[in-house]
View (cartoon, rainbow, N blue to C red):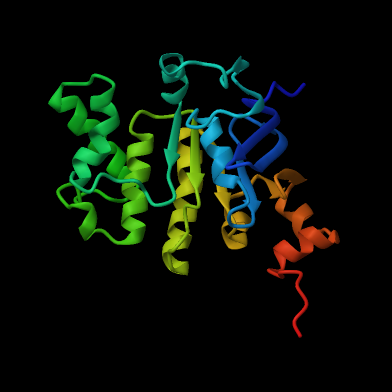
Length: 251
């Protein structure tokens, strides 16, 4: 008998500036899986992620995390939930005024850790896990795009989370660096036994990392299934996305 989903999203609605971005999304996310959320740029994928960590409140709908409704929690009540979720923002969201060490240590210090030895050990472990050991004194301005993503990921996993949210982890990276990030996502899932939710429009990444795929289209979940199911579909909307077609006629 299958256990209850780790995250259950039901009828999630969000409006921004009068425009309905999410139009009643329902989606189950199982513990330990890597779910890839595909969709067009600007289609609401990142907005959806922000709801999972409580950075946005829905107009209506429900999100259950480990059976607990989180959409109505106050900021203080959200803290235990956020401790279980790490997030890699699209641009890394590093603090430009802090070096790599202090960026990665930031969540520990925010949560009250003051022992320098503990902080150093955990920062070293996190940087080693993302292959960034030895770069702790560098400033973000001196890092490549791929290195920034790795540092941001080290920060997200420094207090080992149950869930990691990835917002376009390979955006703006060349194919070789993108491949290294994809392999890192797979390795972290295996080593940390986390649940991973990856927002992307990159089919190459999807093929490499997904246990299951959900396609967001026009504010709704249009498809869920395996990558094989996705690629073998004859549905015109799915085929346009998989094959990279706009659906517009060229004159």
